[in-house]
Image 1 (cartoon, rainbow, N blue to C red):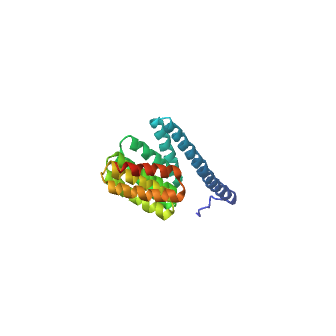
Image 2: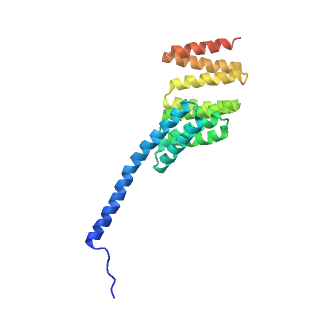
Image 3: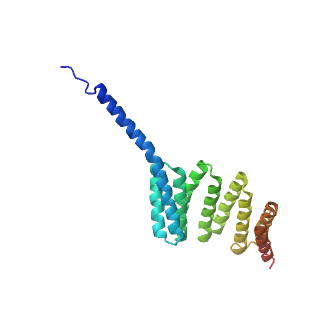
Length: 209
């Protein structure tokens, strides 16, 4: 007894049409989920601005889950960054650094230079808050290297100022502080950033006391 092909031309057409419908549905679902992830992220930011960390982190984690599901990499990195900031405010510095390390890798992969700068700065902040000032200087040196390479001169000046404050207020190295303040002052003058220039000049004066 010979076996019969149960797929007649009409049923084959239906199967193909069904598979096509699934594919099209999948394609349309990804943009929808990306939009929803973005919406949840903004809601998380709103809750965070109002001081409600619990609701904020819930929104960020929901957005993160959706972003991972559809491989929405900017969404993954943005949510990780926000979650890490919350961990930092809670004093969970190592956890924050682990999360920031993942977001940093994604931002570098996507060549999102400003976000790389922000994330490196956030990592440095975890060390400052933990009282690990030498580690903070190391992170700021990484940030300086990145900003110089990416042409972010304003960022370079801000980081040099931050390093000067650490040397002055926490490491007791006034000479090093003056060096960093002076470098920052040169940059801000070149950029015509009067507000920053005045602030740096005050910092330099404070090292003479």
